[in-house]
Image 1 (cartoon, rainbow, N blue to C red):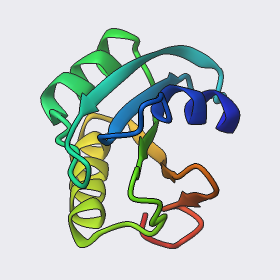
Image 2 (cartoon, one colour):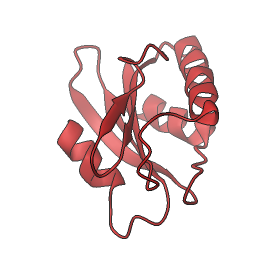
Image 3 (cartoon, rainbow, N blue to C red):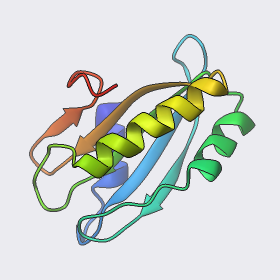
Length: 118
């Protein structure tokens, strides 16, 4: 899954942030996936309504979200953290778990779950 998501968000040329989501069932099995935004070099806007609508369309129990940081800095920004926590809260109200939010650079991966952001 990590390699797949890395390939989805680190598409050359790395001139802007890209987002991608994977939707899973209650056992963690893949149901589908979709791009979820393209931003600037330093900002990605994810339309929460569209993302959660896609999760509901798949009848997903969980979402794994990923996005790139073309800057090469692999730590989440304050905006990344706030948006992730907000998405997790809204998803939880719909009985959907935000399993993780991964940030990719060409040389590293950061898990917000492992980093205790979620």
